[in-house]
Image 1 (tube, one colour):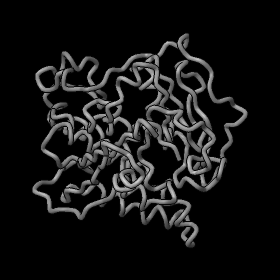
Image 2 (cartoon, rainbow, N blue to C red; image 1 turned 180 degrees about the vertical axis):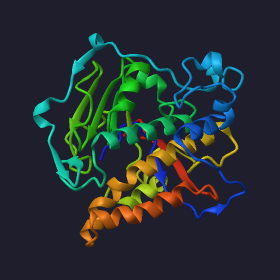
Image 3 (cartoon, one colour; image 1 turned 135 degrees about the horizontal axis):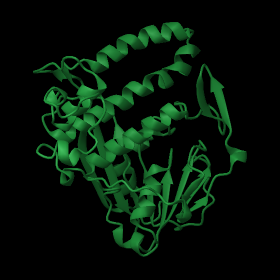
Length: 328
């Protein structure tokens, strides 16, 4: 499998043993949790900053003293459909439906999670968390020059396609290809983005050295050879990659971090975990004989545990990138 000049951002997760907490978070609601994570505290609404469970109409006026726009690494721009072109056609948007959940039809059963709207929202929450942990950067590998010069990018397991489309806006001369088992990407995308439905573990048909940058994240639970992914830096060095770099971070689960950015990431990660429980457990638990009702009863206890602020739980986040030799 050819990784081009760079293979980067392999995000791997494993849960640590929970540590004892020094505090509890009472009256947890989505609104209070957002204000707490953002650093405004649950007293924000009581202090008159908000008059309803919605976000302030203009955060720059209502919360300027606590949260400057410079603190946020993101820019949100409305896409102009005139700059977009049609991508995946409706004819291949096939799905499988089970117990109110929707799954991909191509190589059905390989990806454990559904691909319905709830899962798509969850994927974009994970994307936002990942971007925040990376200080607003779409990647950490030193490939800016290659992308500015019109380099070819491949995003493996692209999901909703949010990462390629965001990268396409940052580097309009680059060509970004996203590949996924599920045809859940938008029909209209930037003209330098294309999507394909395929299995990334099948034999590749692309020419050797086609891509300047290959990106993969949140795929540990999907790929067959998980051991190789967990030892990505070692595998890459043994394969001859150079300048292999490994960066370690922690993704908190919940609102326990003191740092405001990590606390907001913790809220996003907890939301992604909570919203994914039913989709993750439905098929395997029914395969061992549990009914949907029994699964929901079990998940009720799981959700209580996830929301328990007395444990400081985090997931190690590892980012690995390396460069293929120029003469390879």
